[in-house]
Length: 151
Image (cartoon, rainbow, N blue to C red):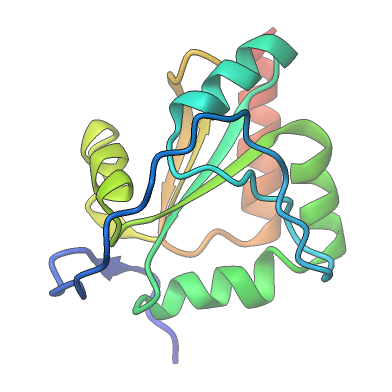
């Protein structure tokens, strides 16, 4: 049985500092059918792109040790309807809670439980938030709500 969420107070493994990228994030192509995550360690370049494209941002906070995060990655984001919807309407950004940049972004958005998903407007304001596993219908409902709030 999977847990619905993981507390982030679990000791996190130390990781090496990640170099800061100064370029505009591009989608990561994994060769599999899934969400197109932007290749960026930082949220700011994603928000800058969102402002240029006038698109909201979908954010996932995860960690490698978080079992519910693995469920999201393997069973939710790979569903055709889900990744087509997210890829078609949002810029998609995910951040590893165990990295320095992930901890910083989590601190800004007061994320203490994983997985947490956010829908942000292009200025970084939270339109929708969910903690724990979000099934495809919940993601669609939250995304639709976020899109209505953008108008």
